[in-house]
Length: 254
Image (cartoon, rainbow, N blue to C red; front, side, top):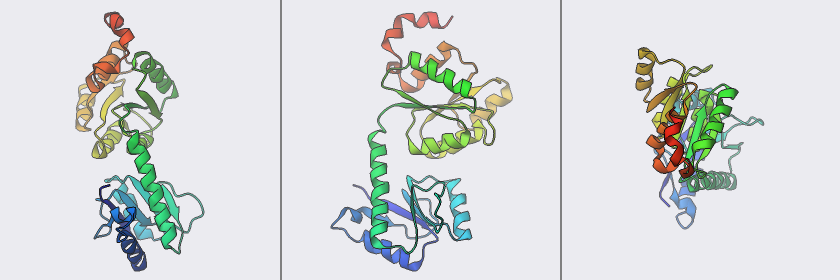
């Protein structure tokens, strides 16, 4: 197991001592943890943040907009779940609670890694009708080993792309809140997923915006069968489509 770096925001000196002591237990799997030397750094796989401090909370929000952590452990007095927390701790921090929290997030990360080899597609669109249409169409064409998820906003698409490795993302352009261009930029910062924009507009300026966002292509809505098949094969390979459809491929372009 390679070293897991723990980034941290707003921790007290005694918290730092506890974490350093834990990481020095080299006789156990805790020896695989290493505390980041400086606070507020985006370099770690795990983030521990105390959000009861306004300064720490704002620092966390700023860091989330530009960085990506596998898991986040939040320290808070709040009895309600803090959005963005994979594990939530309250003070006083004690060795056993912190150790259990780290074990929980590492096991969750390990389970995610085990499924990372499975090919997955994500459809991001605020319209339930479009999401349903895409699910039905993709089910017709895809090899049964490829699964399809959906998200109803750019923000939700970003979160899901952090939790799972998607080979291909179909991204709507016009959505309330964060539009598809912004969501694509954010996803590309932490992911190698191919992003294809779903747009009802094919003007030159929209093509330029799509290119600037870092997307890997675009198709107009509603997408034609052959366009979907071409995108799937281009980004997932010839084996991504159901082999039983092969004799009928030419007919689908009509």
